[in-house]
Image (cartoon, rainbow, N blue to C red):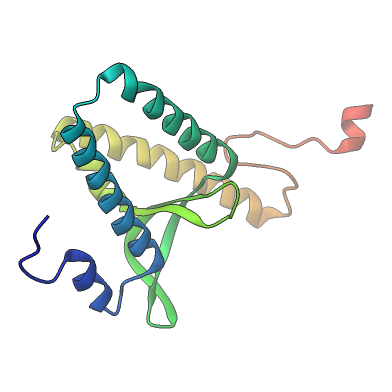
Length: 167
């Protein structure tokens, strides 16, 4: 590879908003490019590559199952403060099972996810689904405002205490 100017990683590191998650994602992309180029140059038979790919997929699935943190967020960092975000967004973080360090950290605006296919009919269905979700969340909040709701989650009609289960 021949570089003609500053690399993407050098430009990104010069940017003051560059985070460790950004660094990880950039390194991840560079490693994927190197692996892709190496595989293309070596012309390995698929039968030799497939077991490595399946092992990598299994490791990723295990990381997702064991420690994935998928959350909806409404605030974003602005310097050393938290401020209201422009809209709700989805945050996905996957820590390494051994070190606990995040190897994947991604965020997506809900509107970007909904508009990804640029299909108006699909967007209408998503909006309707979000309205149903908001209704469930408002009902849950209403129940919470009436008093403590031990062990109640959205969508559950009630909770059972330990004593009631044993009776």
